[in-house]
Length: 311
Image (cartoon, rainbow, N blue to C red):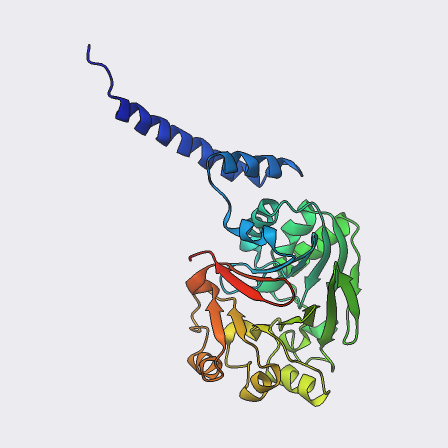
């Protein structure tokens, strides 16, 4: 009987270990709080670290998740966490997995910028899984409120968890660890759900981050007309890079060094070329989730580093 060669044994063991790791990774999102941390430690024994672990050594990280043509942004500051939007219902479980991978035990704030499906749909799964301190949303005209399953499903999940909606408005502010979070808009009632988007300015020491939701040029202009200080180092581009948003005047008011566009395959061919050209002409380093995957901005309040899932 011929002895099995050592390299074949190693090869089979390697394949078996890979299978175990894959099964464990798929199961990790279903583990109770704290257990996902144990799984991350197991991975580290194999020399495997999650992509998002790059955020662990920075006081502030802003994770623009790769959720296709949708929005979901995780903000971490000194151990405190806030989620802005949750993507579509189809994105919900992947958002939950990402939060579990980040060893999230509680979200101090969940913010829904506006009730469109690609921003609110995944929040149903988030509020079902994680304790939520505050659920913030915008005021939308009753005739504009959606009646689809994405909106109604999230509303039902909030009721089941006894979480109350808190309506935010321009001028509101609250802390997230050492970060100052300010609501800049909408400053006037929106004529659409997009133009009712909450616009958030995050400030940590000398670094400013502007999150635009799906605000279109009308809301951008209202912010400029109101004299809002829109200057920021990092801009989350409004409405997935649509031509409805990100005017030259708006970019001149913000003057960011970095921009992120949350986008995926779409029949409207987003982001639009005119928006990309405006960003390019302004000298803004622009990242797209359809190209780079999840984008993480890291800062200590002075310097900014950028990591992307695809390198």
